[in-house]
Amino acid sequence: MAVQADEKQVVAQNKKARHDYFVLETYEAGIELFGTEVKSIRKGRINLKDSWCSIDGGEIFVNGMHISPYEQGNIFNRDPMRVRKLLMHKREINRLFGTTKQQGLTLIPLSVYFLKGRAKIEVGLCKGKKNYDKREVAAQKDAQREIERNFKERY
Image 1 (cartoon, rainbow, N blue to C red):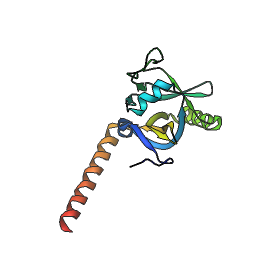
Image 2: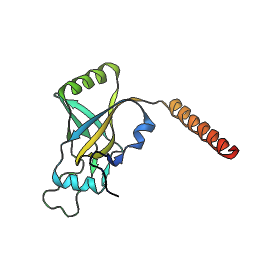
Image 3: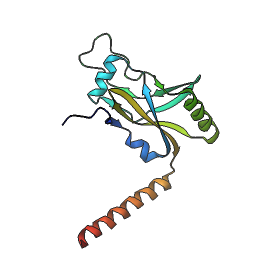
Image 4: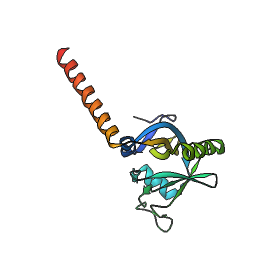
C-alpha cells in the first residue's frame, strides 16, 4: 500500500506527555535536522519521552529529544541529545512565549511525523496534571471501557 503525499506518517509519539499534562493547544513546527538524523528518524530511532521546548532569543528549541546515531553514518553523525531548533512563525513564537510566562504553562513535544517528505513536530501547550487528576482520568477510562463491554454483551 503506497502512502499518499498529503498523508501524515507518524514516526514517534510522546505518550507520557498526555498522561502527565493537559494539552490545551497544539502547534505544528518544522525541525532543523542534518541528513543522518533524518535517516535515523525514518527508521523510527527517536525518543521523545523526557523532552521539552524552550524559547530563547525569539527562537524555539527542543531539548532532551534523543535521535540515535545512524548506523551507516560516519563523521557526519551528530550528538544524539543536542538541542534542535524548531521552525515556526515569529508571531506564533511570541504568542507562545507570552502565554508560557504569564500562565505558567509549558511546551511539550507530542509527536514527530513526516508530511510531504518533511519532518514535522507537534508541540503542545500543556498544563501539568496533579495526582488526583491522573486518578480521575484513569477512573473515567475504566468506566467507559465497562460501558462498552456491557453494550457489546447486550447487542
